[in-house]
Image (cartoon, rainbow, N blue to C red; front, side):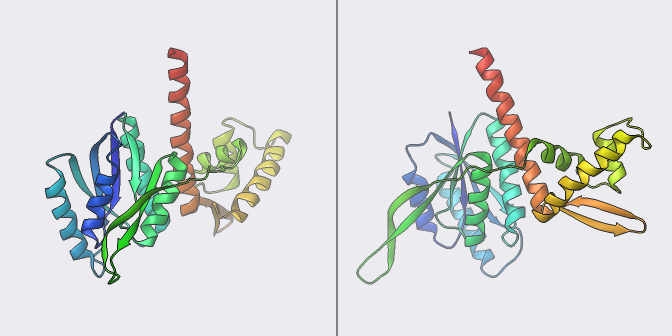
Length: 247
């Protein structure tokens, strides 16, 4: 399977190039270099380095430069998940190379790797007797942890909230279209959802906003991020099931 390397560009050009080449055992066919969206201090240099790396490596591989949020870790992780999802849909394995990144991007990359079951690597620099960096001592794979998603009932609630609901009653009807508001079943559903919403709020996945008499329910950035990861995981499971059926 062809592989795409996701590479976070920093100020260490030679380290990055060496780390990309150190992963030569992978069937890399495509490299995506990430630079910052905002004009942060030092970002102009990062973008110059990205262009130089692109020019040097596109003789061998397909190379693209993308932008990413360097300040917001959850947003950056979501951006990465979307890219990884697209690459895997095209039949490519995805490897994250965090050898030259800011800590924020390394963390975002690790989260994205855990959610999408992708591999992530970093490098240990090599120094000379003058303590000057002269290359890479070793490139290592960072073990990822399985992501423990909320239960099926809670994921259904998160998915139903989507871009937000104006009230608990609206959420009940989204999950149970046609349910009679005056029924005992509706009251039981209200109690059930209230219980789960309290847990989701404690976990930082939803937020309640009072608007007049209604209490609007919205997903937090973490909730949206989790939903994206869950959708991705479901798609992967469905594809695996199809493959098993074909076999």
